[in-house]
Length: 187
Image (cartoon, rainbow, N blue to C red; front, side, top):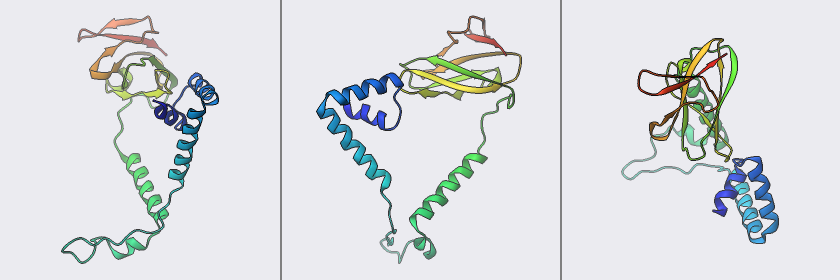
C-alpha cells in the first residue's frame, strides 16, 4: 500500500488533503521516508534513461532484419520524436465523438463516485454517445468540461457496468423513454 501511495504522489494523482497527509506521514515515519526517497531516485533514473544505439537484429534463417539499413543509423532520440509525431498526427485525424456544440458556454459536469472505475456522460449535446470523464485526483470526483450552446440540455452519467444515474446536484429531471431519468439544465 505504501508503494501505491508513493507512486500516486510521484505521478501527482493525490488531492491536496491527501498530499498534506502524505507529507506528514513521510515526516513522521523514517521507513516511509526511506521508501519514498528510493522510489523517487528510481523514477529519476527511469526518466533519464536513454538508449544510445539499437542492436542489429538477425533472425534465424534470415540474413538481417527486414528494416532498411538506414533505420539503424538514426539516433534513438530522433526515432522517439518521430514516433511521437506520428502518434500526434494519428490522434489529430482520428474520428472524435460528434458533439453538437463546438462553440458556446463552458459548463463543468462533476460527480462524486469514489467507488467507480469509469464514469461517462451521455446527453442531447453528445448525440447520446458516451464521453469519458476524467478522475480528479484520488478524492473520488470525476469531471468533464464541455462547450454547450444556449438552451435546454438533457443528460445522465454512466458508470461501471452500464449503471446510469442522474446528476444529484440538478433538481430538474424527466423520465426517458427507456424507464430511466435524465437531468435537465438550461444554459
